[in-house]
Image (cartoon, rainbow, N blue to C red):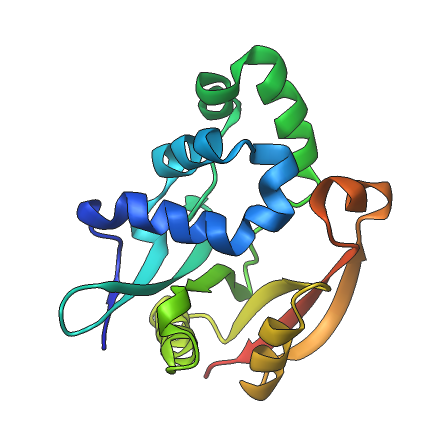
Length: 193
């Protein structure tokens, strides 16, 4: 397995599809329909905010995204949303997505999603990507990594706990749980120095 920082141009569409597969259930109501979501995700994907795992034949196995003051793996602004969803659709979506927005952190490196291709799950890809995130954090001078995990993803939470992450808080969505399909997100941190 080869781990690299950055997303090759040839993998943009595949990364967008894997991202949607991983997060479409929680973002489907807001970014759907799927064909529009894939157009949006592909257009705003920040190649410099992703870490890729490829197999020995160059096939994409998984991606870990991170967020900095310069952007996130999948971010975008109102104008990006407007190009895909129109004025009204963009206005509604920007308000809903704002409820999920988490600021960057001067003290902690923010991991902003990790997703693995279905055929590569259970083969250590997620763990290898997490190790690369820790290395990226250390290289940027951070002592901790921070992430959020939703309450409907106990498998991911178990992986993070196994990796040494600790829970530091929970954010409840209230009525917005109906739009996103989950009720709360737990913030977790792990030392990397």
